Image 1 (tube, rainbow, N blue to C red):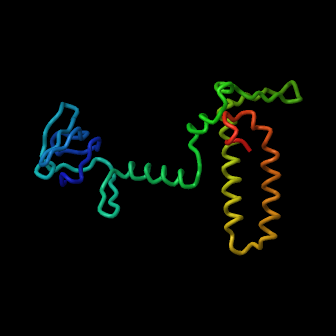
Image 2: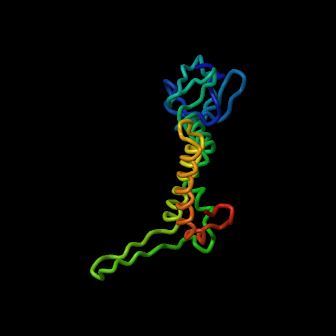
Image 3: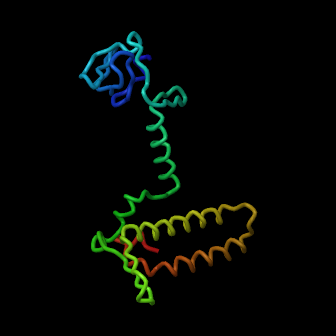
Length: 176
């Protein structure tokens, strides 16, 4: 394995020492933490190999897991989607740790408790999906302007129905 392929934090396999994690890299050697301690090895001479799947993209080599994570993060940002943990930041502070309790009319049935963070995430995902649908309608090449306006009216009504949940949002600009 060439030294250029290594990066700090990379999991590697050594024929004698087993699995290790790259801690530092110099011109010709790498310091690797193995189960039995740190060792300085020359990657090519030692027969060092990646211990995790690798991806080569336009000459860039990195662990496949890191590549996929970075690619997904970029796709999520580009699509305007939000991660579940990021959504909770949009929830008003007074609702953190709260729950929605649904009581059925039949007293023999159990009530349903839903954490507000979970409920809020679902509401935000509906909002995000409506936004994507709106973009797709506006960009659709075969729909006439009249058809686009008609579909937009349905979306507007959906947003209107969801304004009930605006009380959950911390900031006004995130509301429906």
